[in-house]
Length: 244
Image (cartoon, rainbow, N blue to C red; front, side):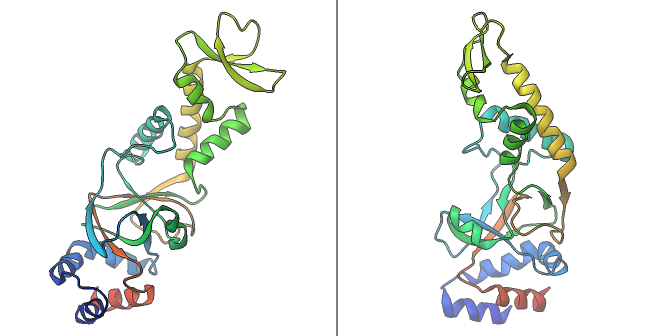
C-alpha cells in the first residue's frame, strides 16, 4: 500500500483513509481481476473527483430506449438472470477509449463479494441489435414504437406499399392494408428480446472471455471509481500484484 499512497500523494491530495478502505472493500474483485489478466473495467462519468465511492442506482431510466421496450428488456433479464440488468446495474466497458464519449474515464471497482457481470460475447449494443433484428425479420424497428406510444386505442401501424414504410392510422379506416396493433408489436418485440438474451448473454464473475468493445452490466450495490488519468494501467497492475 505504501508505494501507491506515495504515488497518489505526489499527484493528488487524496484522503488516505479512503484508499485503505478501497482495498478492504474491493479485495474480492481485485483478486479476480488478477486472475483475469487485468481486464480492467472503465466507465465514463460526468464528474471531476479523482476518486470516489458510488452507490449503484436501482431505478435507472433509459435515455434513448422507449420505456415500454426498456421494461421488456429488464423483465427478460430478471426472468433469465435474476436481476433487472438495464435499470439496476452500472454500465462499463473494457475499452477505455470508448468511455470518453460519456465523460471522464474512471476505473470501476465493484465493492464486496456479491458482484457479478452480465455481458454478451456477440452483441456490442443490445438495443441496436434488437432494432436490427426487428428490421431484418419483420420489417419493423424500435422507432415505430414511438409512433404507437402516443397513438389512440384504435390506432395501428399500417404498411404503405406506395411509400414502403409503416404509418399510424385508425384501424377502421386502413382497409385491407397490412396492419399491426400495439399488442402485436410488443409481442413480436418481446419474442426477439427473449431470444437474443437467452442465446447471447452470460452472467459471470469473470471477464476473461469478454470481447474488447462490448458493454458490460456490472451488478453490485456500490463501486469505487478512480480517475484513469490519476494512475497508469501499468502502475495499477503492479500495485494489485503486490497487494492481493
